[in-house]
Structures are given as structure tokens and as C-alpha cells.
Image 1 (cartoon, rainbow, N blue to C red):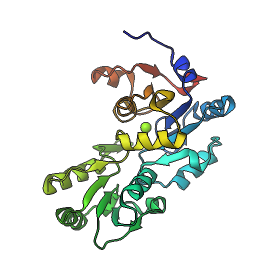
Image 2 (image 1 turned 180 degrees about the vertical axis):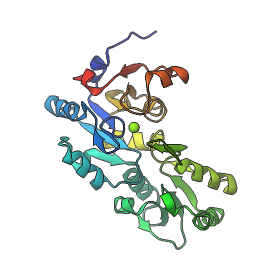
Image 3 (image 1 turned 90 degrees about the vertical axis):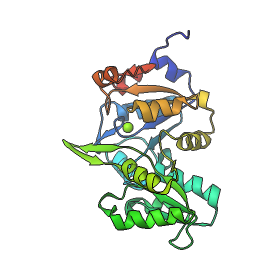
Length: 262
Ligand SMILES: [Mg+2]
């Protein structure tokens, strides 16, 4: 049996940090207490970090401006989104072959390396299109998959919540297309290993040298753990202690907020 370490000591033992954005630094686009102070602390002690997010509706630039507005000490290249990861990953894999991107138009600028085209589509990349999801669009994608295109999706989240309202998330549409075509989508964002591996290669560190801090036990903590990355769950976002108990989740390292790491 391993011995318990304080989350603070776990942080001390690592060379770099991956930080989730929603529920950790920001909530609904507003800063969470302790986030700015925590990034300042990392800068002071010289520990490199990357802020990673699954968002598929905001570009890196937009996220950067939000963080900057609230004085987070972060530069644009310290922010990684699942769109950017798709850009790097698909570029490596497909070079200049045509990719059909069905994504929110806000994030198109982050797919700068890809040959986005509707003709002779080699792979389909699916993101959250909000009201753009229609039967016609879904059918168009379905036909491309049936014609042999590879299938990628930013994530497979089931639903999301705004205030008291629930909305179908991207995962529901990915599943519909998988069901109809019999082709499984490869997921780019968390909890997929693709986003974690790309983050490690950008930091130039191995999985044992890095720590992730996130508010989603499944996406952030379990996803990273599969690659051997230690994680600290923070209770400022999706999960409360009650939900953890109900779902039988017992994170190895748990903090109420980021102040506990200072
Ligand atoms: Mg989060």
C-alpha cells in the first residue's frame, strides 16, 4: 500500500502542472477564488504549467482574453484546447489530406494547420455545433462516414447545464452517428490519451513528472491516471463531496480550493 502524501507535497514533487480551466480557474466565464493566486505561485516557484480545456465553442484567443481580463498570469501558448490538440494531431496524421470540420465557427481559427475542405473528405472532425445540429447536417456527416471517412470528435460528454436548464451535449450526436454508421469516433479531448500525451510533449516532461488539477473526476483525474499522471481533484466545479460519495468515487488527492496548494 502506498503512503498518503499531502496534495501540497505531491505538487512539490512534480516538475510541471496541467490545469483544467472550467471549474478550476473559471466558472461560467468568471474567475474562481484562488485560481489567479495559484498561477502566480507557480510562476514564482518556476514550475511550468499548461491550462487545458475541452471547450469546443471558444478559441484559444478568446480564453486568453477572458483570463487576461481577470489578471491571470498566463500567456496564449500556456493554453491548450481540444481544438488545438485536434489541429496538431490531425496534421501529424493526415498532413495535407482534406478534413471536413463540423465545428463551432469560433474555433475554426485554431485548426490553422489543416486542409479544411468538403471535397474528398479523408476524416470528419466533429465539435459542438449548438443549433447547427440538424437532421440534414447529421445525415451529411453520416454519408461521409459511410463513404470511408475516419471519425474524430472533440469529446463525448453526455449533457451540460446552464443554470437549471439541461442540454444535450456533443456525445449524444457522436453516439447517434456511431450507431448509424457502425464506426466508432476517436475522441481528442479529455479523458482521451491524445490530449494528455500532446500536453506532455509540449511541456517536454514524462507522465510521472506531471500533475493534473481538475474538477471532473472522470475526465480529468481518471483519464490522466491511465497514463500514470497523478491528479488532484478540486471541489470548486462539477463535483461536491456528496456527489463523490453517491457515485462511489474516491480521489487519491482532494482539495476544497486552490488556496490549499499555496
Ligand atoms: Mg472542468
